[in-house]
Image (cartoon, rainbow, N blue to C red):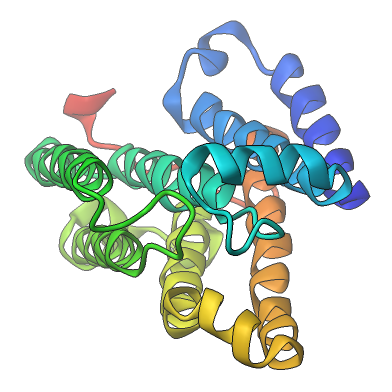
Length: 240
């Protein structure tokens, strides 16, 4: 948790040092927003584990009296829902106008379906919400696919070195992250109920991905200061 806090401080420092025009560019403020959101909900999650009475009260309010020790309600809202939308916006920022409209449709569809599933009670706020996670994860994977299609079809991307593009590394990470944690995430509550040891062991995969996630976000923010390592994003002339 301390490492996440330090990462947010680093990200904040480099974001403040960015020129004014870059701060207004979604290429930089969006990763900063995601980083801040990620670190804040991770810290709040740690607080709920420390303050059991608060966690128990929230669970009781939501109707969960059977498993008051879980704080899935927090991560359902912040990670499976809000973070999914933020990542879709991030991938959208690297796409051409033609493919951006598909991301807009996915975001609208995801928000509407999430509200319907929760209001109807099909997926409770305090449950593992496998349907919502599956929908969001598949949309992230589709969005990653749209990025890679652009990567191999656009002339400017073909002329660039993908290994020097942070958009390539970020999208590749998201692809592996949502693929590797797919089964674990939809069976989270079952694992912790039936085999807590296995559940905690598998959660280390998610923790490792979180570390990579934070590192990539910090790199995206401070990329203008790392021109020897990474190239500028080959954006379309029409989208500049």
